[in-house]
Length: 149
Image (tube, rainbow, N blue to C red; front, side, top):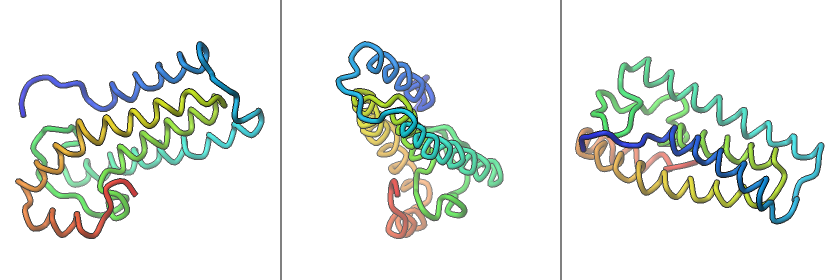
């Protein structure tokens, strides 16, 4: 797979913009009032921590963090013991946190769309690449660790 592609952070930022646009233009209904919406800080912070931990694990093992680039190492330690895709999980948690902070129902639609897009556009292709690269090691890891959580 070659050529320039739109990478996950671009989808993530677009999701935040769309969530804000929906919240301000079509909030549907306010589901979480202030100060209860501040509970959104928890998944937001957890998502940031997951992304940082996963990024550090890739750096420690000197392998790429970018989708569609050939990985040098199959990282299975740290946060990768709990999720095969902790960075995507982190992004979804951050979006959930932002939606909770907004407090209206409509931003949650974007969270679901983002998770589905990431699964179809990146996770499926990455799984095929990891299978081709790491064979039985990937198969064993895949059997023992869930895709998301």
